[in-house]
Image 1 (cartoon, rainbow, N blue to C red):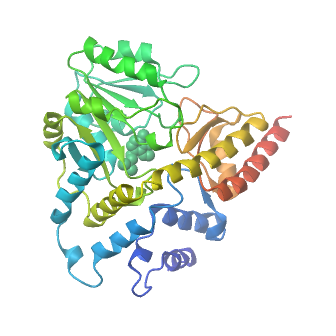
Image 2 (cartoon, rainbow, N blue to C red):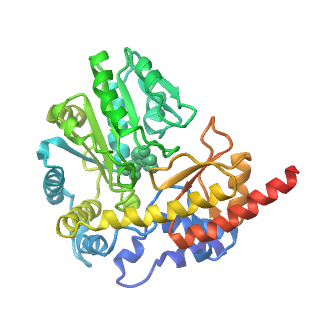
Image 3 (tube, rainbow, N blue to C red):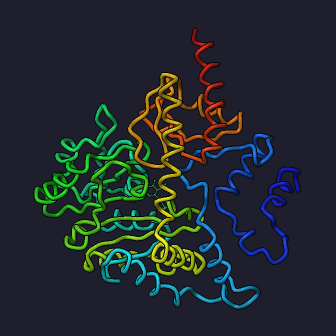
Length: 392
Ligand SMILES: Cc1ncc(COP(=O)(O)O)c(C=O)c1O
């Protein structure tokens, strides 16, 4: 075994007796360990700002629930997750004041996105969405030969509602990612409310998949979930995830809320038993915590907002513009080729987002802890100053 592989295994805690959640460490930590080994830095000196995760993780009640689901050295992991499915559906229904029939749980909201693209687009009926946007739906549509129409963003990095409206003529599904990844922008709440029924009226076959992955991080007043409309309208689906504010990206669990007929339609292509009992247990525990102490999400929003404001201010003070970030990441024009910026930051132990064509000088930077962001801006300063000196 190579030295770095040995360090990786050691850092993972493999072999530690009795520590179930110790081996269930988050994807984020595992990536940091691999990254630290690659750049030759100690693991606590690298900072991962590449994947829009919650750096705080899911919290103790959720980790305890995972431990219980593992059940010591018992039989529990040997059993299928059937006992958890109804309790989670019921807990989600109670949270959103809907029926369990309105809920479809998947292995991350990724499963919902793929399902909806499969069900509602074809080689005749296009998938419409912004360029850039989160790629899962476009990736799946291209893979299976379904038609796609990508609408460039406005000059202010917002979804172009006028062009999207025209692109939706004859289309099968609009992927409405709001806030939009990777640009972190939010459509004005009043404009969203007006646009969605208007476009559904124009194209009577159209479905809209509203992706609310980052909704908990929105600070724009007046922004609301589209869940109430989705319950009423079979052509509207809302995708939600436990991967972002709930800090459970490594556990892979998300869901759709939709009209019950739509849930039935989506269910036809739904891969059953895709979610593990550990993820179910974690999600149920997170919702129980919300019900008894609803402070987890507001605290996470506050924490993110403080670190996000700090980082945005740093960029603005140094002459770099970002979009009006409404998520747990920024999208900044670093005024240099993104691949160079990404590579130079990486060498200094900071992972930032990959390129998002066609925006070749913009970088997506996920928001870590305040301490991480304070360290990261020092690296950004070094990298950007060096690039400026080279250009001078
Ligand atoms: C907008 C958006 N939707 C969906 C997802 C997928 O999330 P999940 O982890 O729930 O599959 C992501 C992941 O980053 C995302 O950015």
